[in-house]
Image 1: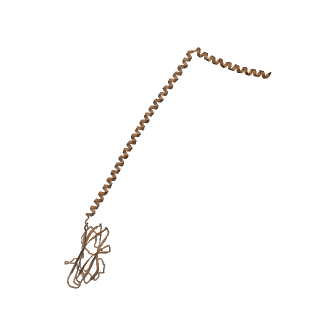
Image 2: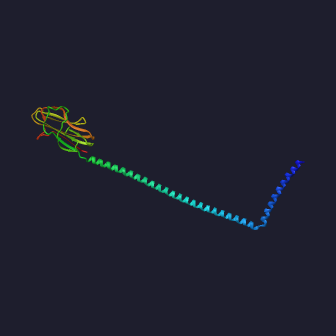
Image 3: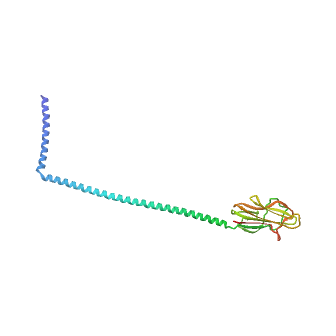
Length: 256
């Protein structure tokens, strides 16, 4: 019996709750129907809200379009800058090529000028013995030092040791003049870097008279090569003569 009463109370409560809510909903509908001004007010507010949203959306669209225009403008400016940079780089490359070409041309002209200067550089010398030189104290292959210098263009001949040192490469012509007194003879060798290239032999050994011999020798030599005159294998008698009658000399010049 108690269970039956409890069940009845439960279902009665459910029924009462549903009936109350239904009445409230019905009342709300009745109020909306009975008060048109309220409905109009709500609709008007909704329209206002919608228009406000449309206005804000339109503003956003305008802002978006403006931002797109700005971005397009920036992109155009960036493209212009890229084109300017490309043009400048092309110009720099062209100028660099021109500078390289001009540098090469200048170097070529400098080389040509140096070659011309070298070709036109005069080199010549002439030296002789100041006085007679006794043969008795001289040895085979002894360097003859021609101590009196009359000409030394280019300062290539050294009258301290009798050596000519070529300052420039080229073709040279060297001359040796040798004189001997009565009863004397001597061969004089022209030597390039230790190698004999020419010989003159003055021989008055078997007669009482002076003897005189000359040689002219063209040589192609390099800068730094050494040329000298020295006593050869034939030597004897009194002396080499170098006075007012005969001059023993060593000379040379650069032909080209």
